[in-house]
Length: 320
Ligand code: SF4
Ligand SMILES: [Zn+2]
Image 1 (spheres, rainbow, N blue to C red):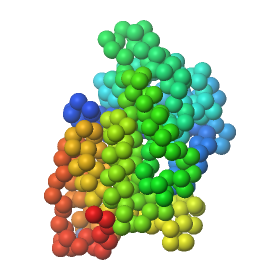
Image 2: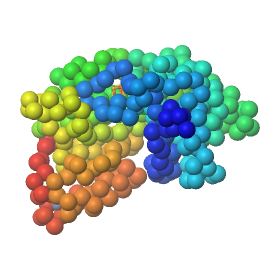
Image 3: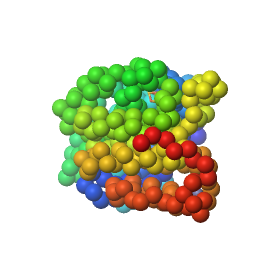
């Protein structure tokens, strides 16, 4: 099969829904062209297709994921269509495919896509209508709710303008208002310890960023520890301007952000490849398990004190 007709991957995981239930969620990583923003911290381009996709390719990618064993039948009830860029970038996902994509995911209760704040506009509302139309044609009682995930990244004024995202807090806030006006839910990504940020301030900026996202109406905030691996980050690390957060920093940022959310919004810690942030292999498993329980339960739990007597093998304490 042509490579443009294969998704980058897909998996099913459990996530706490806005209702409080923990539900199964399908995430499909759609393969498409490289995101034009090229943020300094972003490594998603590694899976981009040099030539992008043609009309029909993205629906074909979805078919591959949707027909796989764990997804077919009753399967997950929410779907994330993540394309390592913006779903509403017409050069990434051909607009002509939107109705067909909508038809393929109309059976889910919620459909979550990601988008840069600058591209929030008519295409979003038209896709929302396509979902409703597809659900009607398929005889569903209700259309899937549409949720758009936007990267706020950080409210740190010394950092945000330097990330290459070309977004301002005003721009983010305006895009959030538009989504709210059209009944589209907002999810927000917040970075933990981005480049240009003093490690000792990382927890506090993550907390403030979560607070800002909630003020913009976010129903979910995902904290993403910044992972090394792009040439830009490597150069910044060599210059002493970037160091990846420790697991302890992520734990503290999660505790603080859950505290500030106080049940108004779900807060999640992104646990992908968590081991790279831990310097103590002995307590990694219980610490990961604690974060997973907190993702599902949305309550802060006491920290894990490992066999390393709570020192966590040299994780540097960071921030408040
Ligand atoms: S806008 Fe999002 S996907 Fe695009 S480069 Fe920036 S972080 Fe990566
Ligand atoms: Zn330990």
